[in-house]
Image (cartoon, rainbow, N blue to C red; front, side, top):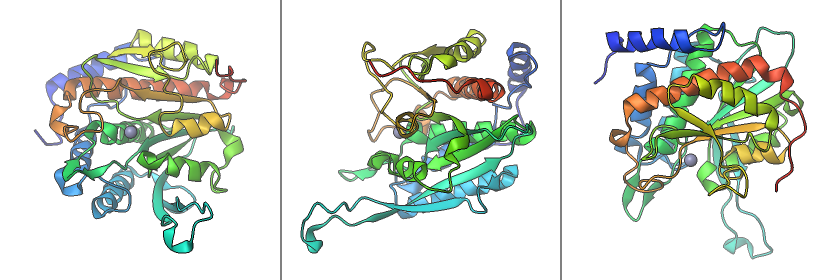
Length: 323
Ligand SMILES: [Zn+2]
């Protein structure tokens, strides 16, 4: 199903969301056909799995930038594309044996805030995936076209309702190659690191056998707990904190691009689902996404971004050391 006319059911959900949204916050425009279309196109066979540096990956860049342009999202520091190089570390081997240095491209969009405080929330999602493995295309619909969809839902909302603080939208490259895009940005002078109050990272938010959206980071950054609890209480999905201590079944603190912000001492929240059977497999396709649940997940993601933006000046406090 495609088309830009919202259904009556969608309008009803939007009204319901308005009634349930945090005090004073406008209803997020989460029933976005444009978001679904983008996620579907990013995970189409035509893009061949969006491996960094591949032709399909270049098309993914064009799709993301075109959507930002359509929303009126400005480029950050006058350009959307921020190239970097990575890999090819010299371990003293002969030149001919050294691994090739590679080029990557992070995409950066900017939504200015209306407050005098010059704090920034970095909202991120990686847009690269694995390409083909053993001759099979890995489309990465959940990992991480879905997170890019979340990035766009937040962009769509704040393009219509100006945030209190600046929002730096980042589509990271080469997450699947050792978080290379995030590592590059954190050390790049283009990033005004002293102003970054938070990283909200989205990686796999569209589906799971266990339909729970998790927020990892509240135990390392306890000041985020009440915000997550507030959003969870009215959330359109089961939304729970977790997966960020050694006592959990997994600790996701170092699992995606937010790890780079965590290591730099910048508070982070990571939204994701537990691994499913198609994780990093050839079956991670758009048609496996439960669009209704995904829309609810997007609603929750946008609601959380609204709450975090409002609370941003209060979020800088010391982290709890790793157990
Ligand atoms: Zn991922």
